[in-house]
Amino acid sequence: MSRRRLAAVVAVGSSSALAACNVFFSLEDYAGPAEAACSSCAAERCRCTPQAPAGFDHARLFVAAKASDLCPSGTVAGVAMGQGAKDTGCACECVGPASGSTCALAIYPKKGCTGAPAQLITSSSCTPLTGSGELSTAVVPAAGATCTAQAAPRSPAFAVRVLACLDQLPGDAGCASGEVCAAAAGAPFDPSPCLVAKPGAGGSCPDNYSHKYVFATGFEDQRSCDDSACSCSPPTCPDTQVTLCQDAACQANCGLSAQSFTNCKDFSGLTHGRVDVAGKTSGTCEPTGEAKASGTVSPTGTSVVCCRALLAQGS
Image 1 (cartoon, rainbow, N blue to C red):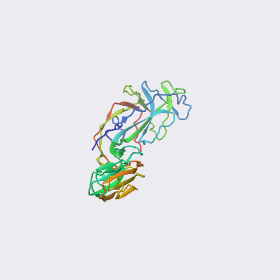
Image 2: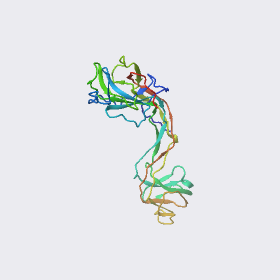
Image 3: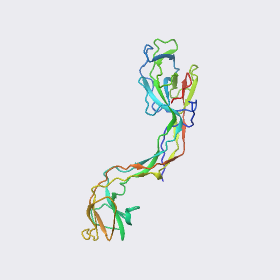
Image 4: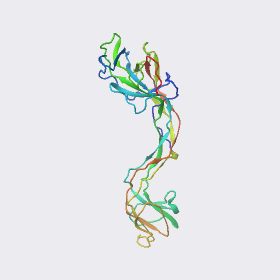
């Protein structure tokens, strides 16, 4: 059994409404303002809104967004945040060499090719078998050519996912003093005008943005995965030809003579073997099974979102 850790952005706690101070936010893809999107409120999509104080960007929030949802044109960046966390468990995966690795003649100490082979022969020279009596054989990937099964945590998902789209630098043409022209939120974005604090900015919201939400900016993932339930389908070994005989030259009383096969064959009385045609592995290892996760994920760091009204619960 082995355990691995993988980091991911998550949230803890859940609620039927988007509650302040219980929502978490990643600034990993944050970008600052670029060229003006609403230089004049003559544009249909633009509205006059109170000017954002220093350290904040105008933003539109899409509550209950899907991971595939994107920000509309006219925004600089999209950052995902959310409320509550869904532990999506662990995924089995296979780690190993690519196709084209060496194949071998495997000798098993009993019938049925069960358990680990007692011997792997890759040489074209006649090689004495280490076992005797009733044995079995198969053509398999050589030592080091098989895949190893392991597990890693899947990226957790928010119970309620929110997409914040940061507006480009607004203008002030056509607006009153203290106002700027910013893009209006259209469906499916929340209609409330909101501000997102830039990294390093203070946490106080302006008076006309009285609804404050605190978001996490990082995470600590302490989950681990039990990969004992994971396995990998082995690569195949086509075009490998092998010989099994009763003499040290692999020429007399041969139960197998330059035969190509991958399935298990039982035999007895044969004492030597060799690889006549060295085939290479093909195909890829496919993982199977469902690993279990344990441990917790904790948010770290904070940022602030300020809105003029309560955010609505999305659907």
